[in-house]
Image (cartoon, rainbow, N blue to C red):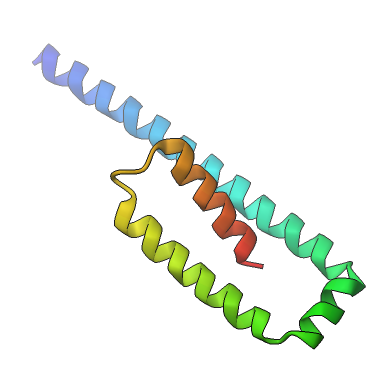
Length: 95
């Protein structure tokens, strides 16, 4: 019985650590998205660029979808660093 309690406590601790890490990464990505959106909204050159090249919006949309498909297909084979970098790239493309 003591072994079961010890195993359950260890699994609970691992799950808590995993969720803490997950929520910290999500908060960091949301912060990156917010900062990029803020700085781009302050840039008149960016708005002129979008007005002159409306196809950029479509390119960004399809880049997001392609990135999601790539990440979903290769997540188990990716290193943690690569997955994190792609997640940050995705959070930048969300703007």
